[in-house]
Length: 433
Image 1 (cartoon, one colour):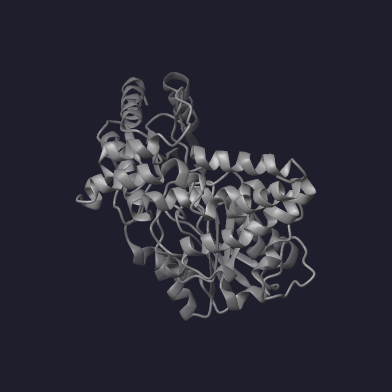
Image 2: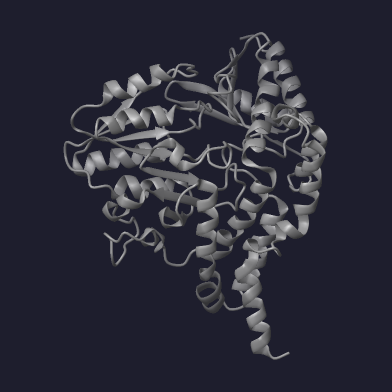
């Protein structure tokens, strides 16, 4: 076989990658996942969420360290092995001749990826841009919108810091008015939340910023209702979907928003450092790109991807993460992770001195739940959980929120959560607060 022929075959295999019947997921998991699904097809969604034999098949796909129990998946989630292998495969290829294989081969894989993401998001591929994380996506929109001195933006004190800082930067540089409302979570009343946004809107309001799932405590916000209210007043809506996308069973158009950004390395379990931005087609032209573009007012979503040299292997690994996600199913995945959250949280809320900071109502929470113990700071509880029990969580102290955030994922076992419940009980019983 000639060298040219070998190169051609390698190119063909690479371009097909995650988007073909020869994907790593199909080779490693498709048959086993399908077999496991057949065994539970007679069960209700609730019963499947609690079927440990089925989920053991999913858990075997991950390579998590057995020496610690990772319950901070709200920060970043591990990728299943097939996603790791995809990134390694593309990285090895790129390093055989970076300039050639990156720009002439791997760069051509972005369009199939765009279509794959659009299918997951329920949108047109022409509205999807691939980037590194929710911060990059949302900052591109926030800093790219045509806002002038005196224009108002409504957000909350419980939004993500990088988004808050972007609005404050615009307020400092250009004189926009950034208004923050504040909530005492948990809240189990849509109208209370919608009313708070509505009361903050004035004739000068141009934009409402909504965090779909509050990253600190997991509160699910009634995005569609807020968006409909805002649109009725002529106000645009941007949604931070960093913690909801790849976790909850929805499509972006369901939210009725104008702009959306998310990280893919959270619940979708895509490679670390991958994200996605969605802009309604008719609004693309008015958003200035963050990295410069030769045609900043283009209607082409690709103007937001002019990032220079980037990690092509990471981008292409996203495709295998989507395959893995779809092999489980969005609804089944959401139900399982919510079940895991309720499994531990419903038990610890019965322990004296323990307080939950998240609703256990399915409508208002899914994966993330905040917990605290009277007399302990979040940092002290976080440290105790890890030092004594090797349970990794994260302490949260932000505005009016003070708790430890705990977030399981599909690879989390009930045995891990039993250890968590036992640990919280022991810590609470010996604490004199």
